[in-house]
Amino acid sequence: MSPEVRSDLATLSGYHSAQVEVDVRLNTNESPFTLPAGYTERLLERISELDLNRYPDREATVLRSGIAALHGVEVAEIFAANGSNEVIQSLLLAFGGPGRTTLVFEPTYALHSHISRITGTTVIEAERGDDFVLHADHLAGVAREVDPDILFLCSPNNPTGGTDGPELVEAALAATTGLVVVDEAYGQFADTTALDLRDLPDADRLVVSRTFSKTWALAGVRLGYLVADPSVVAGCFNVVLPYHLSALTQAAGECALAFNDEMDAHVAELVRQREALWSEMSGLDLELWPSRSNFILFRPTSKGGHDVWQDLVERSVLVRDCSSWDRLDDCLRVTVGTAEENARFLEALKEAL
Ligand SMILES: *Cc1c(COP(=O)(O)O)cnc(C)c1O
Image (cartoon, rainbow, N blue to C red; front, side, top):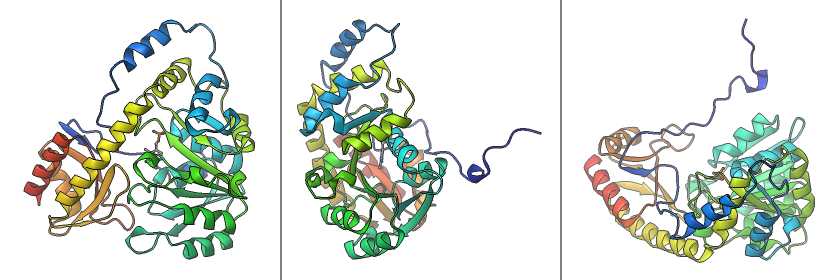
């Protein structure tokens, strides 16, 4: 008899996103830009100075200080980990777990409920309204009833693209007694951020998570962080494995912080590209949702979503097939790429439709 996994995990399946060899890869919301000139040299120099025979700084103080300076907060308010997924896992290990509850509003980022379940946390799935907009009174009603240990918002929301704005964060804090986590993996693409709400009276329960994977073009490094009250940061340090952030990861993040202006320029360019792509797509046989992010959710109206996805793959363009997800029948999600990539996508899409 082979060993069996925990019975509460038996029906879960791992994270899946098709990895197909194509010319134009617009499926995982990565940055289409390579790193700024000078980044790699700077990183190699830093790495050559490291004592790799020694364990890294457990607290990643230099990196966390740099992130704190970026946001004008204290180093004690920053926790960093291997991608914001590990940040979320640490939060759930410390503040979720058996007997505790998270509240999510679907459709949203699948990993919030997935990691909750892996950590034995009960998940309550509520719904977003029409057009995937979350209204403050609906949120407050559900949140008051559930009073979750952790309430997840996602701004901009993956995969739908709109923001969960400040009024929702305020409503969530007012209606609950637990943590309110705002996943801002795409926060730089939007014009609102929950970081502006940190002087609210209840802000000691507000957690904002960010990642180097998307805007910073460092998905391959695996680095994310949260900004929160020092007590939340201390809770995460209690549960994370010792030396979880390698010296290489810390160095990669530290060097990236020196290129903040270049990253901002890339964000501005992608916002321009998003607006151009959206207006081109709005002329086609598609239902389209507004986006404040670096991706656009759309539904072909003349043909099945999965068939369009397949036709795009045949034209060497990969987008995300969301057509089997709840409430997203026939929907696809395209990441905003460079002007050339977007043009290739549009050409292939027109043919596919
Ligand atoms: C991509 C994404 C992340 C990033 O995860 P990393 O582990 O930092 O790469 C987190 N949240 C959302 C909503 C995302 O789409």
